[in-house]
Image 1 (tube, helix red, strand yellow):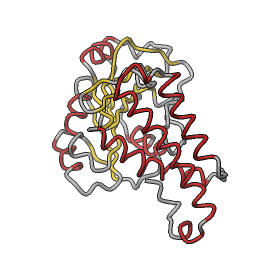
Image 2 (cartoon, one colour; image 1 turned 60 degrees about the horizontal axis):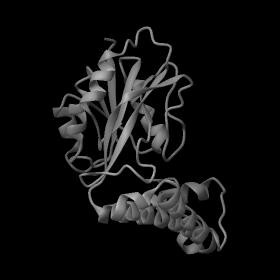
Image 3 (cartoon, helix red, strand yellow; image 1 turned 180 degrees about the vertical axis):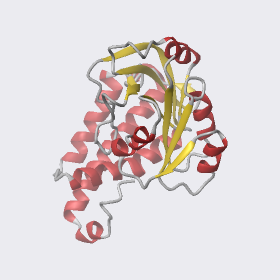
Image 4 (cartoon, helix red, strand yellow; image 1 turned 45 degrees about the vertical axis):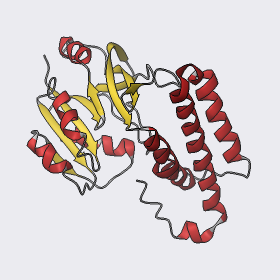
Length: 262
């Protein structure tokens, strides 16, 4: 088997990092953590688990995830978020790959997104294919500052799942959507010159709810499906409302650091 480097970006992930690195260690002989200023035990725990810690102020999702591969010893990179874990089937599939001869530059896993301990299969949360294993010499993450993905030209899908413990509970589902997620998106849109009008928050919020609840069948997942759909609507509504606020209120705009996305 070709050697693989496991890479994780972190910020205050003391509750997650050990389980994530333990998961990676089943298929990786090198572990790298790129930390953006944790003030908890994240870095100490990562080093205790055998990872090399690189301290890097946050650059945005894609640029931050591209830091680790430049420090890796191996060409093949397995990149996980701190709240993601490899399943047994994923470990088996990865170890069975012949990465020395493959024509593929990346491999995608199905991602199981969890709300608490509940696996949400509706709302577009499954199968949610994500490229996590890739050849750094041929590809890498996009430069997007949020929701970046690996830009592989010849990827393949593995018949295996990745676990993603997205939100601890319903409260966190809504607080993240209404807090840092929507504000980060609004700041990025403002920096890019995108503009909103008075109808934008309502139209985008309504569209997000319909997409999740109706078209992605959130109605089949009971209260969890409704909650995920409402959270998506809140996030979409607020990011456009906050963008409009940046446009209209100079005091709020002038007090905001647009170079600090996260």
